[in-house]
Image (tube, rainbow, N blue to C red; front, side):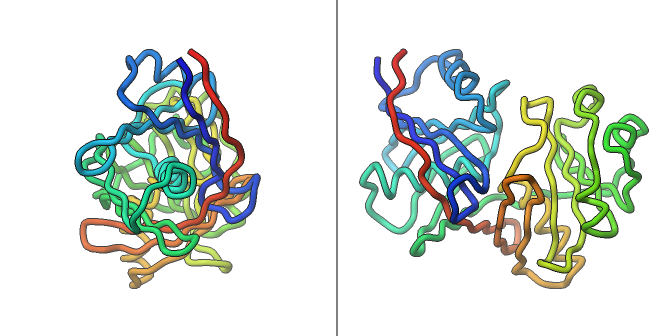
Length: 260
């Protein structure tokens, strides 16, 4: 069996920036084990698979280790592939997913995701998390199975060097760290060694937690941010009640064929 595969750099307008995702269009679903094996073989933060449905597409995301409920950059990559390489017509694409109905709207080169806003609650970071991150935060919040640590300034955020071996043993699925910034509204980094991703380059789904927090703190609903990874991710977001809109561009890196 031959399958088409694309690799797209999302949340960037330059090749080798943002976050790379593989996208594999399917006519019908393969066994879950095959999907996971393809994602592991790709060894990218995410591989997205989609199947056409009556009202749009069914979309799923896999890390090298497991399937996840939501992914921003691979959704942008999927919309890019549909528009530019799979002859999709229309300004908006509807995806059904484990996180419900998601839409992506295209406006020129910009793709805007409509995702759920997460509820965040004040929490305490356990000693093992602080030990793994290496710096005591000013505030700690919990959202779903992840933690968000807030720091005072961008310099602190840039200097943090997590011990990923220790972080992998912590109870939290992933740890998001963030701070204010002089360059933009806020900056952040995202660590998820349990999912096979030590540090993610440009994490769209993190905005589901970041936008509610920074919107309340800065008293504004439209915000820009930078993810401080080596590849750098540039994201624009807006809080829309219980939803968030996350916007970014994408660039094609490769297209090819998988033989299984």
